[in-house]
Image 1 (cartoon, rainbow, N blue to C red):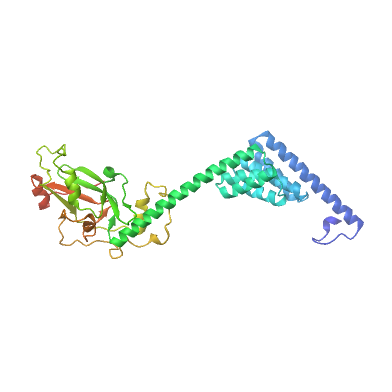
Image 2: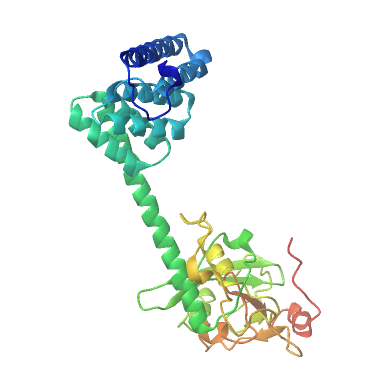
Length: 366
């Protein structure tokens, strides 16, 4: 009997030929029945979708139908997988269907839907275009093509925003490194939010700067302090004669001629390039980015690589107002805690003596 023939051998007798024809016809009949049964299961609803997939799978495994019919089986199974949300399996089945029959419109449509659901927009677009070549007036496919175009455009816009944010952040890190600035974890963000420096077309840094009044722990904020600006220029504007006194300064001690500016000499651990990039990208379109390439390793200033020694250095360093912001930021004892922070005190205030003597310390941050 033909059932006992070795694989690959040719039938030698008319009986063996007849047996093979009978087996082939039986397999074809079985495949068709399984296909029809699978279709019936689909019509009965979701609770029988797994039964439908089983029927289509068994029909496919008969391997008894023409390429066109086999393509329909794969396409049908793709349809059920789409209904179940098994988009990867649906895409694989739809692709197999189109390989067997490139003109299978339903398979192309299902491949496009599965690709779109998997956010494979380029592939979805290609399947749509192939389907529209077969049926240019199909409204469902045209609608899907429009949805793909919209999402593709939105993705390209997001990708451009991410690329721009990462590029800007890397440029800032490079600027910090060139200037040998020391960057630590951001502080006082409850006062400043996620303010960040910017780099202009002339490669000049513009910093948001926080001014703290330790006597009352109040604050002022300078949105744009160019690194080439002298401190005196900003203080002249903030404490000019035409400006009203600070609301809490009942004794009018904080006048232009009386104020002094200090920074706190810090000892800490500088952030790595990777961590600086992460902090710069917070709140941007690229906040989710994980890898940054070669910029991930090393510190912002290679010579620091850890603790900044401040042995025997005063805690509070008075600033010469005629110096520029850059002059101060590059001081070995200055660490930028996210953005530059300076402390304002008045020589006219009784607090001045406590501050200068070191009897006052800023409150611990949570």
